[in-house]
Length: 149
Ligand code: IDP
Ligand code: MG
Image (tube, rainbow, N blue to C red):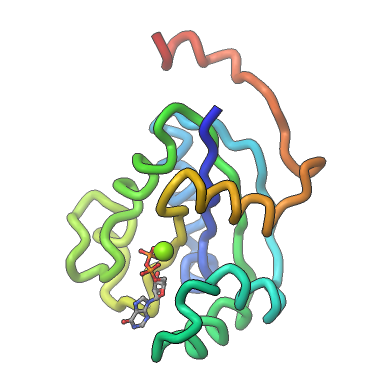
């Protein structure tokens, strides 16, 4: 089953948006299979954002991600990677549609609240970077038959 790595960044945690953000994925019908609150090490932050290593915002991004706790999650469901990106909204919150998380709660690209994997292969890489296999729960919610035909 498809899985995506989703993280509520330090701004989302500090602003008290954890329940709101988790609720959006729950209400959509996706299944939470991993969740932890953590201070992120510099090493993990740099690995996670490795593709942006040469970008001018890389250092600031890493400093921000390690500055305050993050909520790291794995969500499961058919089409979850692409759907989560839609729920999250465009990278710059000023361009994100209202109704998306970034569109509803953000105004700055460096404070855009949440991360979501951009492709299935990226999700697999990110999940193995952030979680050990035993930290993930394989389960089927009893509501599934009312959500998936
Ligand atoms: P994404 O989070 O929508 O996938 P990416 O392009 O992968 O966006 O960039 C990763 C993160 O880096 C963004 O979520 C944002 O926090 C930050 N970022 C991207 N572009 C900029 C920028 O131009 N200035 C500052 N921060 C940026
Ligand atoms: Mg990205």
